[in-house]
Length: 118
Image (cartoon, rainbow, N blue to C red):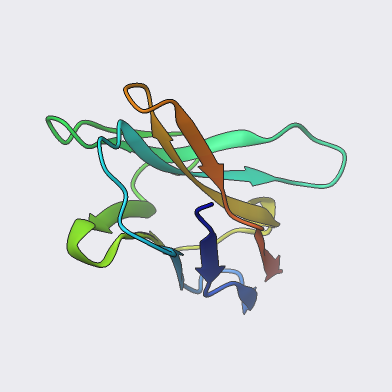
Protein backbone atom coordinates (compact mmCIF):
# COMPACT_ATOMS: atom_id res chain seq x y z
CA UNK A 1 0.00 0.00 0.00
CA UNK A 2 1.30 3.44 -0.93
CA UNK A 3 1.11 6.35 1.46
CA UNK A 4 1.16 9.98 0.40
CA UNK A 5 2.51 12.21 3.13
CA UNK A 6 1.76 15.92 2.90
CA UNK A 7 3.58 18.71 4.68
CA UNK A 8 3.92 22.47 4.60
CA UNK A 9 0.49 23.59 5.69
CA UNK A 10 -0.08 26.12 8.44
CA UNK A 11 -1.33 29.55 9.36
CA UNK A 12 -0.35 32.52 7.24
CA UNK A 13 -1.53 36.09 6.82
CA UNK A 14 -3.26 37.21 3.66
CA UNK A 15 -0.70 37.98 0.99
CA UNK A 16 1.73 35.43 2.33
CA UNK A 17 3.08 32.23 0.82
CA UNK A 18 3.24 28.55 1.64
CA UNK A 19 4.75 25.57 -0.12
CA UNK A 20 3.05 22.22 0.20
CA UNK A 21 4.89 18.96 -0.41
CA UNK A 22 3.52 15.47 -0.94
CA UNK A 23 5.86 12.51 -0.92
CA UNK A 24 4.95 8.96 -1.87
CA UNK A 25 6.22 6.17 0.35
CA UNK A 26 7.64 4.30 -2.64
CA UNK A 27 8.23 4.73 -6.34
CA UNK A 28 5.14 4.95 -8.47
CA UNK A 29 4.93 3.92 -12.09
CA UNK A 30 2.65 4.77 -14.97
CA UNK A 31 1.34 7.88 -13.23
CA UNK A 32 -1.36 9.61 -15.24
CA UNK A 33 -1.83 12.70 -13.11
CA UNK A 34 -0.53 14.24 -9.90
CA UNK A 35 -2.61 16.93 -8.34
CA UNK A 36 -3.80 18.97 -5.42
CA UNK A 37 -7.37 19.35 -4.21
CA UNK A 38 -8.86 21.27 -1.33
CA UNK A 39 -11.96 21.15 0.81
CA UNK A 40 -13.25 24.04 2.85
CA UNK A 41 -15.78 23.55 5.67
CA UNK A 42 -19.25 22.93 4.29
CA UNK A 43 -18.01 22.74 0.70
CA UNK A 44 -17.20 19.97 -1.75
CA UNK A 45 -13.66 18.96 -2.50
CA UNK A 46 -12.37 20.89 -5.52
CA UNK A 47 -9.42 20.69 -7.86
CA UNK A 48 -6.69 23.21 -7.19
CA UNK A 49 -4.08 22.13 -9.73
CA UNK A 50 -3.17 18.98 -11.63
CA UNK A 51 -0.33 17.87 -13.86
CA UNK A 52 -0.45 15.31 -16.67
CA UNK A 53 2.78 13.34 -16.44
CA UNK A 54 2.75 12.52 -20.15
CA UNK A 55 3.17 15.80 -21.99
CA UNK A 56 3.31 17.96 -18.88
CA UNK A 57 -0.08 19.62 -19.36
CA UNK A 58 -1.10 21.57 -16.25
CA UNK A 59 -4.56 22.66 -15.16
CA UNK A 60 -5.40 25.21 -12.49
CA UNK A 61 -8.64 26.25 -10.90
CA UNK A 62 -9.62 29.72 -12.05
CA UNK A 63 -9.34 30.97 -8.48
CA UNK A 64 -5.69 29.92 -8.24
CA UNK A 65 -4.32 30.83 -11.66
CA UNK A 66 -1.37 33.16 -11.47
CA UNK A 67 -0.92 32.57 -7.74
CA UNK A 68 -0.32 28.83 -7.36
CA UNK A 69 2.26 26.67 -9.12
CA UNK A 70 2.30 22.88 -9.22
CA UNK A 71 5.53 20.99 -9.85
CA UNK A 72 6.85 17.49 -9.43
CA UNK A 73 10.14 15.73 -8.82
CA UNK A 74 9.55 12.20 -10.08
CA UNK A 75 12.97 11.06 -8.86
CA UNK A 76 11.81 11.88 -5.33
CA UNK A 77 8.22 10.75 -5.91
CA UNK A 78 7.14 14.17 -4.71
CA UNK A 79 4.67 16.77 -5.91
CA UNK A 80 4.70 20.39 -4.72
CA UNK A 81 2.28 23.27 -4.61
CA UNK A 82 3.73 26.75 -4.29
CA UNK A 83 1.03 29.11 -3.09
CA UNK A 84 1.60 32.86 -3.29
CA UNK A 85 -0.62 35.86 -2.61
CA UNK A 86 -2.79 33.75 -0.36
CA UNK A 87 -6.31 34.91 0.42
CA UNK A 88 -8.69 34.00 3.25
CA UNK A 89 -10.76 32.17 0.64
CA UNK A 90 -7.86 29.74 0.19
CA UNK A 91 -8.43 28.41 3.70
CA UNK A 92 -9.09 24.67 3.45
CA UNK A 93 -7.67 21.23 3.96
CA UNK A 94 -5.41 20.47 1.02
CA UNK A 95 -5.06 16.93 -0.32
CA UNK A 96 -2.62 15.52 -2.81
CA UNK A 97 -3.63 12.87 -5.31
CA UNK A 98 -1.77 10.49 -7.57
CA UNK A 99 -3.75 8.64 -10.21
CA UNK A 100 -2.94 6.01 -12.81
CA UNK A 101 -5.41 5.01 -15.50
CA UNK A 102 -3.09 2.22 -16.65
CA UNK A 103 -2.35 0.63 -13.30
CA UNK A 104 -5.74 1.61 -11.86
CA UNK A 105 -4.66 3.25 -8.65
CA UNK A 106 -5.93 6.44 -7.07
CA UNK A 107 -4.02 7.47 -3.95
CA UNK A 108 -4.85 10.32 -1.61
CA UNK A 109 -2.89 12.01 1.13
CA UNK A 110 -4.26 12.55 4.60
CA UNK A 111 -4.68 16.29 4.10
CA UNK A 112 -2.88 19.33 5.46
CA UNK A 113 -4.63 22.38 6.87
CA UNK A 114 -3.99 25.77 5.31
CA UNK A 115 -5.45 28.77 7.15
CA UNK A 116 -5.15 32.28 5.78
CA UNK A 117 -6.00 35.10 8.16
CA UNK A 118 -7.19 38.51 7.01
